[in-house]
Image (cartoon, rainbow, N blue to C red; front, top):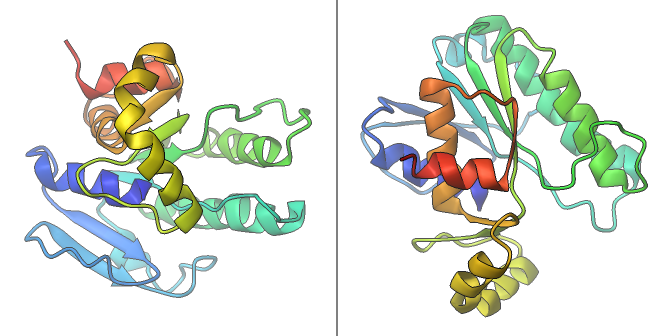
Amino acid sequence: MVGAGVLAECLRDSRVRSVLVVGRKACGVVHPKIREVVRSEFFDYSDAAATLAGLDACFFCLGVSSAGMTEPAYHRLTYDLTLSAARALAAQNPGMTFCYVSGEGTDSTRRGRFMWARVKGKTENDLLEMPFKAYMFRPGFIQPMNGIRSKTKLYQALYDVLGPFYPVLKRIFPKHVTTTVNLGRAMIQVAANGFEKRVLENPDINRLAFPA
């Protein structure tokens, strides 16, 4: 859902000349800006060095829910998967900008009680040590916009229920809610112009989406 929303904003923004989409299956979007690579291997990119060269930014939106997962399994699909891609991209594009979609409540100290927050914190910390310039995006509740839908049925049911109330949620919890549009626009803005903070919370995301 997040990746689809970010892609939509990239296609709308004139600053984005082209987009290399890497996923497990075709994204289903046809556009002159898009190049697409479908692959099943996300832990070894040794066969993709040439494909990953010449990129200015990466918007890393892959992720899984930790619900029902053991810590080793979640670590593999969050930390190992992300760092595998990051190392491959850094080798080809050390001057790029890497925008990682993390989550509100991520634990950079890695000492908290929530497993997912510790793993996300470790992922953030190590990305920030990479040679490229990395930015961590920590959205809270993300409302999908413009027809974007979650592939997780339970989540989509939640969005269907809460969608009409988003304006109310925005007023009551302005520091904890955002949209796929805001997240995509903020990531493009950071890739284009940088930002004074390397870890961005919801208020930063929403402010960057529509700068004054």
